[in-house]
Length: 443
Image (cartoon, rainbow, N blue to C red):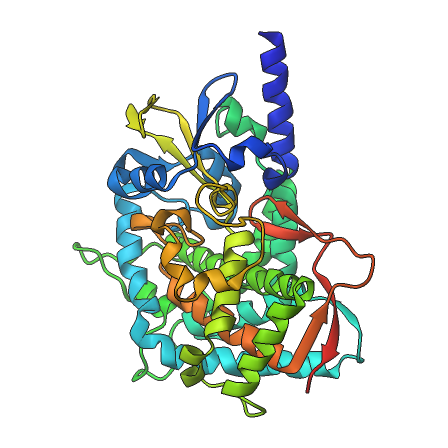
């Protein structure tokens, strides 16, 4: 009994430090795993059929778990990432028009304009300089999401947001053992004061936008912020300011962090696979040449998009999804009691030996015809799936593909000799000690 408890504690400590490093090799072959904590059980659902059951077929029985909520709630409040039930459904309905496919051509113009500013800044650096590209990639994606969703440029405030989110990730990015032990939410969590300080800096920017209200062309399509401000419930009441703030924080986080990380991991992967890098450059030279990239080029940048897809498979920014069972259930023949934690780790699923050929290999070709037909629907979930699938999925893929192609058109990015970059699985899948790459000009 004591030995089992000791093993559980060791497991929790490993999870707190780096979630993706804690998975045993056997988990990449198993389809359903039981982990016992002192107060409850956790079930790791690791098969397409199990994912479909939890996230699609019987999703109403699975709500966001406290493990997930307590990590994000101090920053996102009751935003879409954290809320459940009727509030989540209402907020999703209000926000979803902001990412409708009809808006993508207009959004592409902003993505390209912001990307060109980033390219110019990278060109200004000395040839061969080593840069932690996490920062410029994060700043450009933050600028893009701010302009698209809120209607305001960040400019120098982008650095404030970047530093605030770094501080929040350092204080709240780890899994709190308190959640696994079932301790009450009112009990103070470690790092709380740092998290509150980071949120205050984060809010200093978001609340400025909220106070400013509508200053854009009234003939233009409304931004997400305008949709939130203009909303009225059936009784004619507006959305509470604190809830508008929570949705702004949620969309800002979802709309920039994941894309920035994807770009970093994509160029890291290319630096390790020269044949793939050569194919990317040949495609961009053929489709685009020396002229600026346009929205109309995207359908022809098939290999560049496959690189993005393969990067999301091997390095999914959202590497874990957590749920809690509301009532007793059965998943693929396994009994799941009410109150159990359900974990779906895209990191495991995307590298599962049963569902992927050469699961650890970087092979963008697997997302090109005819190989793409082998990809099982619920074995690949970088944006989640079911009713809670990321509503900005198509915008995120467009943004990642455009920015990736723009950087690859101008530069080669190289891991410096002797440097070691590892994935660190906490709130998102970040590189440690950073994504420092040498920038070499192509043009």
